Image (tube, rainbow, N blue to C red; front, top):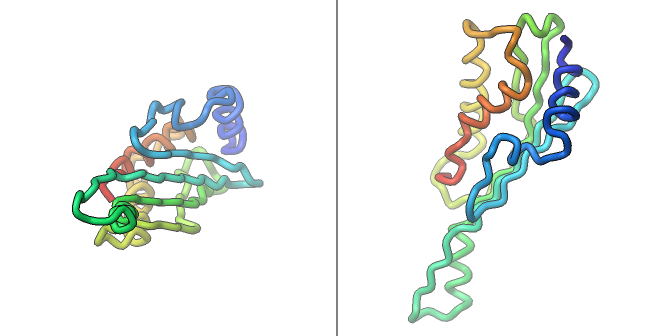
Length: 154
């Protein structure tokens, strides 16, 4: 079954209008987490949006403006655009994931772009020796989301 038909089956029949985050039971407390998949001709674009509201802690001796300024540093925003490109002989070879764009706001010392490039390369390398034609798109997506499950720690 070609990639587009597998993708269409997942988006239309299995999701049945519910958000992907709910389908995989990935809701996050104190965060806004959204995943959308946009099918194109021979590939698809995945958008992963994660916004952690952070924890508001008030320093009693500081004015509210400074407390709000400090609170802004506890928030994390990551917005990823990923291209999932199947080879011509899909499903007998794995799809290739690549990072198209990333927007982030984090007080983390980690270079977010390099971090996600590394995660995507790990995901692609996973299938070099371990690919099977029965790995459908939704399972591949879930395996990728498992790799990025630590978003709240960025």
